[in-house]
Length: 107
Image (tube, rainbow, N blue to C red; front, side, top):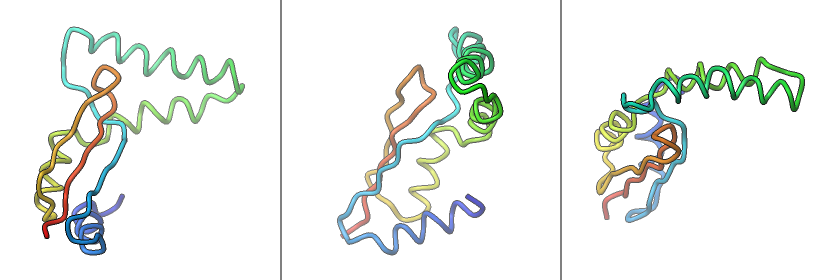
């Protein structure tokens, strides 16, 4: 997304009052003891599996590289609040590499 604040503001604008915005997307995980394993899995195992099943590696190397440029879950929550959403939050999944975000448009 080229302009995240504008996109979120527009999504808030067109949402019905009291409606919920929900997103499931990859996110950068927090640093932990699992970080080296997550990095290895994303940069070695995923491309290898992609190549084994499809004989194409580009899409499966692009995914981990692009995921590292995504916002952290906490950063996206701040953008949601700045765009006017209330009751914003998130829940991490898959060792912190995926997050479900939500926010409600005020009544």
